[in-house]
Amino acid sequence: MTPEQFGLTWKEVILYAFIAGLVYAEFKRMRADFGRLRKDIADIKKDFKEDLQRLEHKVEKHNTFDRRIVRIEALLESKGEHNAQI
Image 1 (cartoon, rainbow, N blue to C red):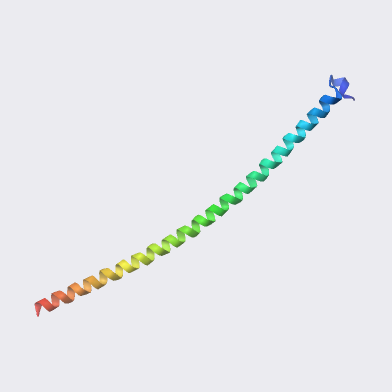
Image 2 (cartoon, rainbow, N blue to C red):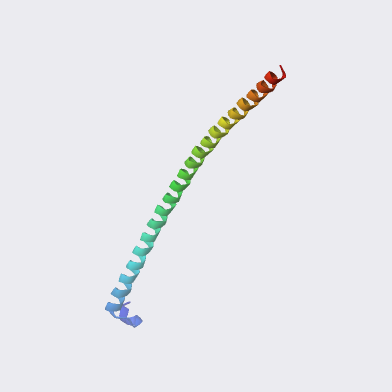
């Protein structure tokens, strides 16, 4: 079977093969881009989790500090009331 039997010239066959090669190369490039995008998204998720853990640690540290201040203030108030009664 020759291209002439299908009403095509050799130039058209070569052109279609070249275009098919370009489309295939573009799909391969897109697949590689999607692979890099998945990796980037995974890295962003990992960074987000680490940032969230650091933030939670800072919040807990701040809350612990606030609780200490409240206990000290309550202790000072109770001693002040005790001294005022004497």
